[in-house]
Length: 170
Image 1: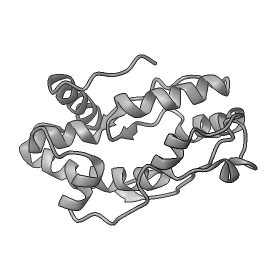
Image 2 (image 1 turned 90 degrees about the horizontal axis):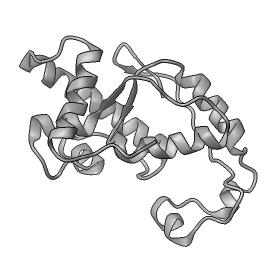
Image 3 (image 1 turned 90 degrees about the vertical axis):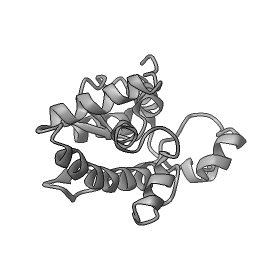
Image 4 (image 1 turned 45 degrees about the horizontal axis):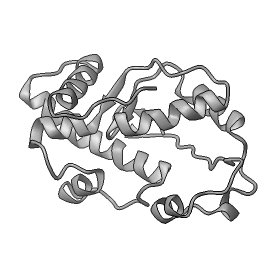
């Protein structure tokens, strides 16, 4: 998904053929079945397209220490270059404003009146995260603590470090 001038822009998503059966506990969380990925492209195709679309743009996550290792594994499996992009984390931004606890993506979306999207699916979570970012940035701007995207990225990660979320090795 692209955010351009604060507006939600072009979206893209793809299932990935994992080359093996999907474990039942994973299917229970995200609802993706073996039948759904039967005709999906292989990791190489999806990784190349994801890398192309992201380029060097700033990436936005809600809890990047959880999500980024999955993307790093996809890029490795697809022989695509890793991400060295700047990262803004909406979990860090939310914790910095609202304190710890109750800052899951779903809880924040409900608290801030954001539209419901399918949970635990890439596009739904990306849409919710983009809308959450759109709500949180003005709050940080009002505090006068950030004036640039780079400062926002650093702040979001500083809060995560200070509140105990640790990046996973990628």
